[in-house]
Amino acid sequence: MNNMKRIPFEHLHNCRDLGGYACTGGMIGWHKLYRGEVPSGLTETEWEKMKEMGVRTVIDLRSLMEQRAEAYEVPEGIERICYPLQQYELQVNAEKKLSEEELIQLAKASFGESLSAGYVKMIEDAPERIVCLLRTIADRLPEAYQKRNPLYDKIPEELRSYMATPPETMEGFLAGAVQRNYTGLLMKNGLEADTIEKLKQHLIIPL
Image 1 (cartoon, rainbow, N blue to C red):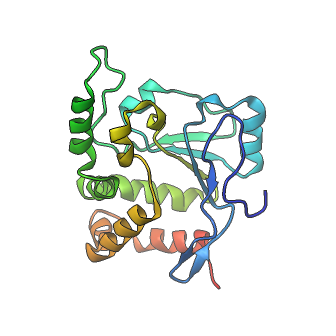
Image 2: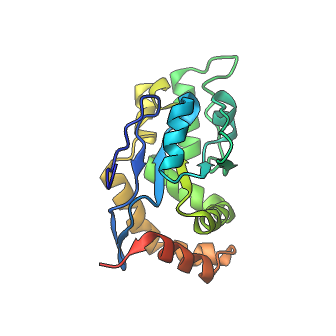
């Protein structure tokens, strides 16, 4: 499993090691931070594999609606922390089934015109939540494990562009983050220089 981007699990798709990416000062170290889908189907053996990978904290970024729709428990030795970054909820599991057009309107209200715009909205609407998330990661690395939206395969095709994350989406978002000085925005909302230094020390390997 050394330096593998995609970690194979039978009951957990798209689990990836976030190491190996180039960044200012070097690259993100391997086996520091993982992301994946909801681990609701993991077996006891697979949870033990998580522990062997060093996972001790699961950070759930899903909306409250998503957490209700697909709940799960973590085993002893792993802590779960919830930071719902999504401020609007797609009511795909509501008793009154919404039409596809209604779902699209909800997605636009939540994300804007694209997922990249949705990331911007999450940061600018609630920077204090991002600050709390960064503090948690800084204090708990290499124990953090992040998840993505579990409803991707259950939503209409027209909405999937809001959930997928191709390289150009992230490149556009990161370029905009620099232009909008999100570091300054987060520091105005409580992000300490000490937290930034912890993240650098934990995550970055000089090259």
